[in-house]
Length: 138
Image 1 (cartoon, rainbow, N blue to C red):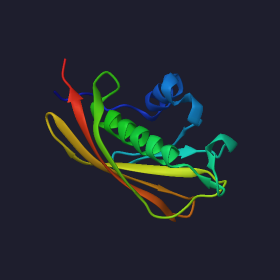
Image 2: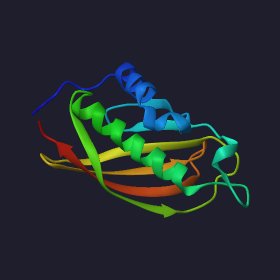
Image 3: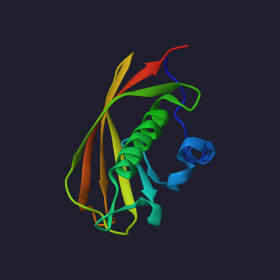
Image 4: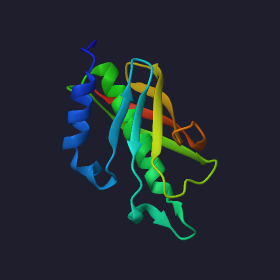
């Protein structure tokens, strides 16, 4: 069940061709064996009443960052889907790029567990997420 790790180029290409993510404008910011970070540039469509970035942007960023962190480990040919995503909103983002860093905590045969944090460019936290993914076995 071991697969070749996905490269940064492969992850960026996967992100670019994933139609379900295009409305967010996410970019691969950083990738390593330990973590995957996305950048989500601010768009006016993300602004909710009160001038803050809406919650679904953070949840989509966390879900996508975790998906790519998993793909980094299992390769782009293998897949896993979200089974559970929990979100804690810690502070507001206002008209700014949101970064989201995901880390795989445990890679099981069937289930994968991880965390993601959305933050600004200086590390100030906006959200904290826990995620469980189910591996799709062919």
